[in-house]
Image (tube, rainbow, N blue to C red):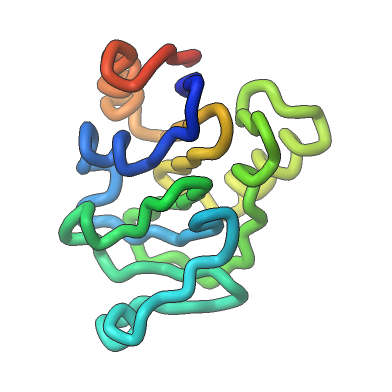
Amino acid sequence: MQWSYDWDPSLADLIDEMPELVLGRFVSIASCDSGPYRPTERELRNDWQLTADIATTTKVSAVSDLPTPGFDEWYVHEEKPLPYGYQSFVNTFGFSPLTANEKTLNLFWSQVEMTRPLHVLGAGTPTMFLVTRDKAIFERAKSMNTSLGQIKP
């Protein structure tokens, strides 16, 4: 599903409303502020990993542990994922996993099928999206359209 905005959306808004998306899970950061995220020395000491420009967290214990400057794209896993060089899609203006051009859609969905995340969260311009395999999360997110904007399931 995607939310449409008249401004740059932020994953901070989504995870503040639905912290269960990330709490107790591993997050691979494909984009942070339009580029790779470089974990701090402290994060690396706390077992974050950096492989092929993709930072992967330890199990997230607080939403404040995640960087959310905008133009962010995350692949959320229940178990520690294998290293993978994710391609970022949120840096393409207007990217949507529902309406992008056919080539881009094929690349995005191939990456999702290959890596099998529980969720994919993205915030670019002018949309924010959530792809999930969790039916309860999907239903809850659908009910949030008054707080985050217009939803397209």
